Image 1 (spheres, rainbow, N blue to C red):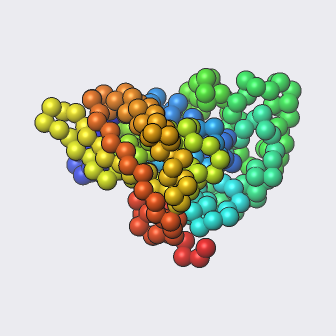
Image 2: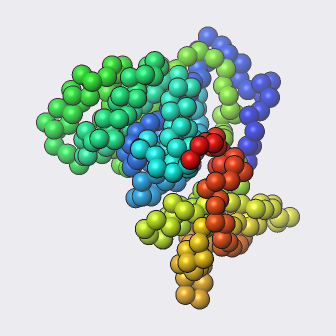
Image 3: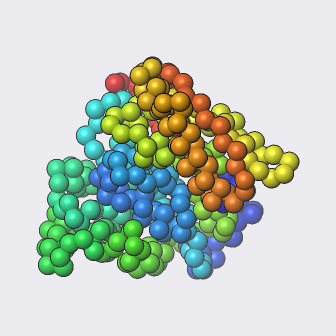
Length: 316
């Protein structure tokens, strides 16, 4: 992964020519529709964490795809749902903000689940978004063709979509067709990122997101939703290896005990899984140190929202 983490000076990037294109595409959908899996498939590497739990993505994650003269910045937005907490509302606001700022919006629908109350709410919200839209039916390998066609017809009758795609983000089928169309659809303009940059996340945030994924996968029930991971120190050693110090913040002492596990076994397992994946992503040796601390009201701390790239909602 490239360690350039700031948008570079314009002089470093290809200038707009007759065929140079660049644009932003927001991936929106209900929780667990497959947005993060699709983003990773489009980019060709892991830039957004994926778990079986809903509401894993908390902020806008940007993945950059550069092919030929075109560059697309795909925005993986948090799943849109009915918010109950301050953090929930910040996530939903981030999702709608991503939709409103993009050149066009791709609505990702779990074809197997079909039209749910969450999807109904999404369709109603998207009616207020003037940006062009595409419909992406995901997990199409899990349902019969006649049911799939009926769903596509129903959704196109509800909302105006420029194009409909049927894909399996997990298997990769149909993803290139969507990408090819998007590359033709984005406007003329100079690139925003160097050709070899795949995400706008810093290495420190990427490392925190990977550890948070392992926490979600290892710990059940509500604890992951009341936990956050922050990279306190990210050091590049003289030998080229990375030393990463992270803190897992939870809201209760009982949660801390569960995350630590008997004899520290659970946090050791989370650390081992995170370190293994981080070495694959960064392609260097990684020394990862995890600590678990209680911060009772981190969900009400504006600084924590800034760390996650979210706007802090002042009302609960």
